[in-house]
Length: 158
Image (tube, rainbow, N blue to C red; front, top):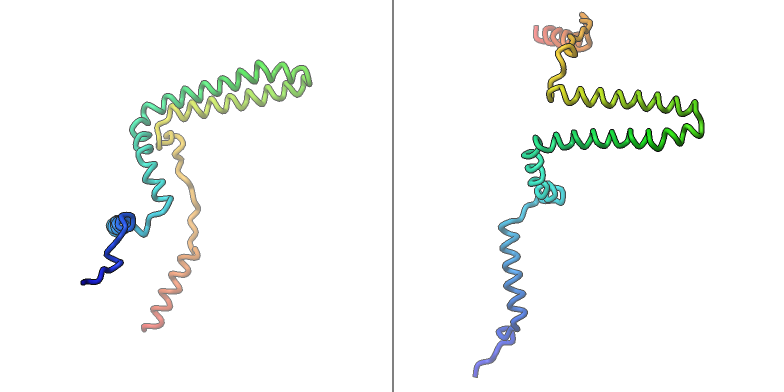
């Protein structure tokens, strides 16, 4: 009579574990990447969102412009409706200084936002392109170093 081996009598769970282990090994062998990190995975996951933003940037831009205008108007309205009466009751000179400062900041915000809307992206206005005048130095460190190197080569090989 032949002797039965105990290893040939496997339970179904060990068979399943072994198959899963082999399947995992095959998967990792085919798809392993040593350069994979959480940053790379995050960048890969965020790429469709960036494509969407790039695709709809033309439509999103005016919506953001409206949002900035509405939020600025809301802040100014709250400052005049709530802040002005409150500070007027506390100190009139302080209120005058705060109103002057607030209006100055508001004019700057409106002016710079308007200039950003009107000017094209990446192109400054023509009058801003002024030629920069730099004094020309006859003997700079770089030219002195080159002259010494040339003189050294000339003396050494003659």
